[in-house]
Length: 102
Image (cartoon, rainbow, N blue to C red; front, top):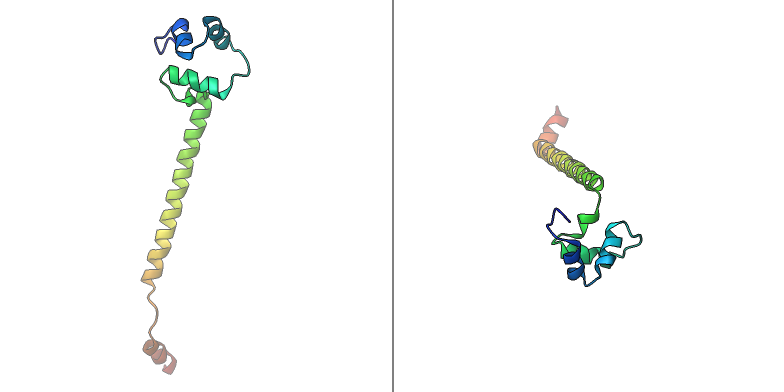
């Protein structure tokens, strides 16, 4: 809450809850609902990912980068195959006949 410059009393007011409720909540009250977490995030002007641990956010970012790199490699491989198939032009009938006639 210090990061957001908001007191417990102000957060309680924004949530429509008592200051005691906010204190219990901030002290680790178990089993908060998604609705409550969403209300808190909105009251603080944040998204719900406010409650996602930074280690999870970092892992998500690493996974996203790895996925993007894999997609890029796949696109490059497909492009290389496409270019290679264009370079190998089909042999015409007359060329085949000339080779066969030898």
